[in-house]
Picture (cartoon, rainbow, N blue to C red):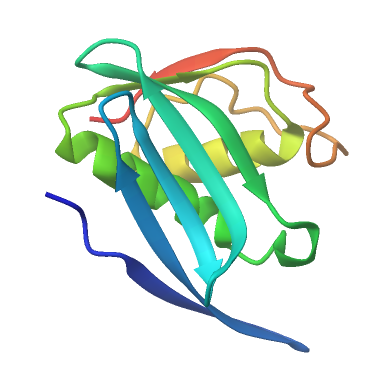
Length: 138
């Protein structure tokens, strides 16, 4: 059973766009794409480690759409799809300050146990400043 794609609208000064989130279930994991029409603006990929755990292997948002909520929407949709498949643990390799801030927001909002809750000064997308992580999502 495939989750229903979500639709989100972002409104910021001089930035208005509507995108859909499209989950894709595979035997090896779950991917979620953020699309404007047929154009991909973001993607997050995961692979199952066990029947209870998955690893995030890729998370990217096109530069012009960063800092507009697309990244966090991708993670929320991915975690929802993974939890529907029985996954309760999420892990990942070293990751960027930007990804760290998304994990912090998700942990604060949903009570997940992201281990690096200290503020990361500076940092940019893809800087790989934070070490590997593992936390419970279900």
